[in-house]
Length: 340
Ligand code: 1CP
Image (cartoon, rainbow, N blue to C red; front, top):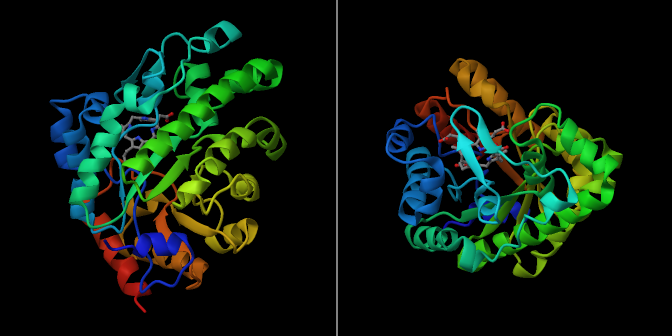
């Protein structure tokens, strides 16, 4: 097992900077698109052999230093009595959104062994097959709540904020249910063999630091601190979270994932050098010419300054327009430039 990625997460010395990409399995791959002609996304997530195949394909093709389980943040929520689907070109859709106390009561607790047995099974298959560590993941309570309350993807999260600020007790009960489920879900992935976890609070950047601290951080902290005894690195990521980085670290992260809006060195100063950092190339840069992409990737490495504790990644997921060959070339570039 090559544990380069795990050592970097622990800020231990590494012979080169490890790389993986959020959404490294997905639409940009012809093989994935071919599989999706015959299988729905939730069907792939619920079929361990298919989920494992898609997960491993990305690792083989790209030469990355970590795998991330192929699934979706809404998979556990769909097993908690919430009727949802994932619409092509749009994302998760919930027809009966959660907007009042009676709706929260419909969100059942999650028993991973009973409700989502296929997840641990996919992890077990992958752990046997892969020679890099597998990252388990979950959506953070806020980001999951945003889909439940809005009923689908949103730009401004107005209904979510209205519930959070207007009905704080109802909000808290929803967040409590989600944090218990997310904790159980991540623990099940680690117990099945995942060597690290990433908590995706993709949309937390919509909040002010004060609202984040009061209404969201306690739930994310319950998840991250509830994993502490397992001893696996905990990565905490969000988009547009420049002002939230110190709080996201304080919630209990070992590694903070940052998007491209804050230069890596500035972000690391905000987080503090007792934590590792992951990021943060703009995914759109991978669509530019090789020379431009190369320059931007070197800027990211320059921001890390060769300090231990940097995991190279994009600032958000791989875009569907991305060329697999360019992504592979980027992995090689990071490996060559950081070899020591
Ligand atoms: O095949 C398809 O239908 C394409 C789109 C797709 C894919 C590939 C969706 C719908 N989900 C996934 C898989 C997925 N989702 C992965 C595994 C891929 C990998 O990393 O290798 C992961 C980690 C996710 C996590 C996820 N889903 C997040 C958090 C990460 C992020 O991108 O911020 C979020 C917010 C979702 C919701 C979701 N699912 C799908 C879409 C298009 C969206 C986003 C919708 C929106 O903009 O709100």
